Length: 520
Image (cartoon, rainbow, N blue to C red; front, side, top):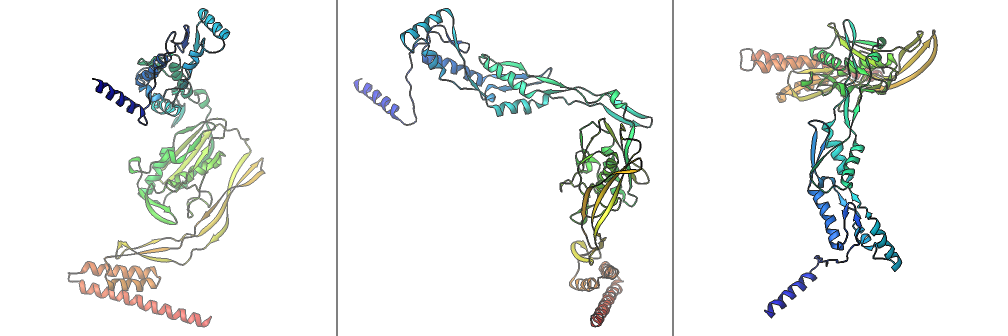
């Protein structure tokens, strides 16, 4: 038995000496009667018991459930641990014991006498994980929000009608955080509970009376897309319809990309030609820039505030230089403007069967009757198209010859001119634009071409004559298609004849060039 006791003592001694293992003897000092920490009566408790009972409260809070509510059927249950509640002033235990036990004999006597007549309360200081608490209220309770619906206009054949607004509800994040903290710090003992967070009304903008005044045409503009194919025409009509009918209140900004994207077939778009880094490519939504450009010019007529506008990489034909507004989601190009009037505005957009698109801005006209605004495109510099470029591609089969038109390079600016009573009162440049020069690009398909075919194509390309290139490419394709038929030999001879003609033309061009060199 003696050996067993000695072994136990040795084990405990070793255990106490192990690194990282702390032991703390119970502190039996008793707190005076009449002392509270928070709403916990710690009278006659030992220092250790008082510390434990307060820590137990924080442990219960961490393991509890708190349900946040915001009206019927809107609730979120979180754990107390999600709040990151901590006890920030554990030293309050020592302060509580000190009352009546520390100081000189007179101070101790007075403190104990005071406690006989009136209790003394020390505060518990709570810490919170403010980042986590903010995320809970602002993001996880975001489903509690009900967006407002502003009063809006609708234009019909009989004129304008007003669509009523609807009050929205939004979680008041700072106030709701304060409510949650107050619950915890007011003595919550960690029982599962629920609490209503603060939700405020978000009244709709506008009124029937205000919108009934929106009748005046502030600006209108029309462009034509008669030369567009079916897909591009459909894209113009679709983009126009996505903007049509918007009501914009004073100070509100209209973001065209937000209104017309995504550029997907599900959103009504088709593949069509568009500009990309100086070349024409097929992309979903090709032609949408004519929508933003037409709207841009209507906005200029209405004299609203343009906050973002970009020109195209190459010149467009449906407006004058510097009067365009390009859209390129991947290229960071957008068109945005602000309603700088003191009344709501209404944006009407429509397309016609003869392929015209029109945007009209309606509002309340406050400009003088003799106030006139016009815009003048000024070309500052032109760069003629350089020599045609000829490129081969394996992405297209032999026989294919495609051309992209040349584009003259421009530097231009748009000038705004305002007159009142026939007298010019302002004349200012509102934007400047630089458009790339792009040569005519001829693309020749080579997929499936033999070595002989390639030699013939290279000879044709060297002539830099699109007609000759097309003739040779077509003859080669015809010969390939005729292989294995009775006409194969004749087709091959025709292809060779086309190649020989190209070679002869090339030789003639070289002779002429030599003669010009001698003459010079």
